[in-house]
Image (cartoon, rainbow, N blue to C red):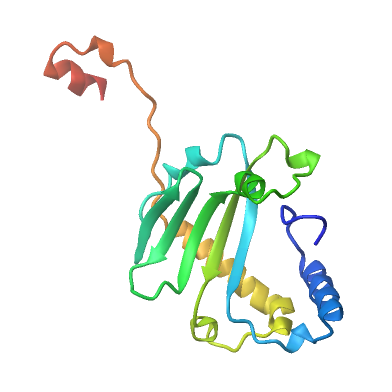
Length: 178
């Protein structure tokens, strides 16, 4: 939709996309059962995306899992990987999948933050989820709040400024420096 997946969809855009795909497939996707869901947002950053991963620490009940230089996963600490919070470099991912990158994003640092529901969606969200559910504003707000709550539950690591350690000649110098 909109020529690529670098643009975020409004609820109205999502409705239009679902109806368009329904027409093309000649089936009503508004009544289709949703079994997997990714809800996220793009954040434009000043520096490269991986530089920010080191600032994200532990998260309660999740395992921090940097899968590559350009992605960071927080997975539940259970055998069933049902819900994950994922951070990744959206531009690098688009290039990897040979997606055309619009000029406005060519030199941008875009971090994608996604809350992924991989299995048992109805149980996790405590309601049946259909195509039409995705267009419900209260459902959208519930997902948005859940994404925000997940993000703020991560311990943020403050970067300290590097100090000149060449002046350390004895232990007392090191203590005074810090």
